[in-house]
Length: 380
Ligand SMILES: *Cc1c(COP(=O)(O)O)cnc(C)c1O
Image (cartoon, helix red, strand yellow):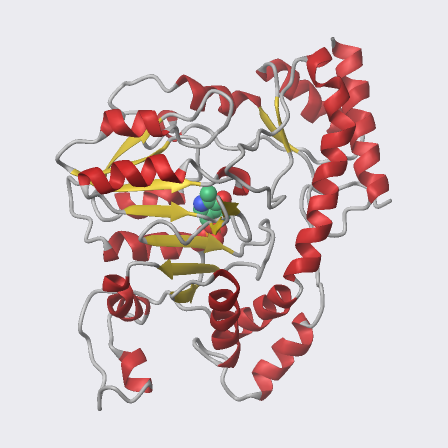
């Protein structure tokens, strides 16, 4: 057992360092090199995505999505309040007004009934987040989106290898974004991916990613010189990042298998005491799969969560809380329209996440669960 037990630990699963060396040896380590193409092909084949582009982060992929959807000052974008800043900041950068929606009472995902009430003639996008890699109710969301002709962006940062009714997450909205940040299932330190499901955005996505130039079509020989044709930025990662990522993707099945074992070990150990101490285990609806991105408890109170975090900390275990509702954030609270979002606020106070990474051992999981039970029994 390692001590202390961190919340997350980046890990080499296979050929990461070999591929990084080979990328350097290839003589090209800037973007769109050999390993970027290998990653693109792997992800496209595995999930049947039509067009994908590696990006420097999921945040950048979201910024590209906001540009692609032509979000203008004053446009309204509906998104959950219980999420990471980047989900909405990307749209705020284009001048959008964020209309925050609440979560379900029993799951942090956005509640489609909430979305229906928030749509106005100014709504230009709906951004959904698959919390902990668990699918949102995409049929209800897409039905609304089609009825009002509003594009849906999936922030699938946590949702690699997760499915909604057998469809891979990231394949349903017109644009989707993934993260390979070191805290996600498949990592490259920093890194992300934009998935383009609606092909009307494909050509422009390449341009935006290449500083607003048509350099990608130039390299394919489609134009005889390249120049400035649109707005954009430098959203493509170095091939060194892609080399690391490709080694991880090759090990995806093994990584997922182990994460699921860890997740179920937590789940089995803590299920018998959940009712007694009043906390809830992660809920996974029938239409969703579990990609074991995160193991969390929904505590009965902020007090219970604080006691848990403190007790585990003293035992050498790093457990952490998660998002703070964005409608109450220092940046946004003055901009919010004042609607109460009690479920988002509930998860702000109640969610505690436990260590989750590939080489977390069974003994370590057992030790963490033991300490959780000791803390709860002492404080109940
Ligand atoms: C991690 C995460 C992001 C940001 O990903 P980066 O690759 O770090 O930019 C965005 N949204 C959600 C829901 C996330 O979990």
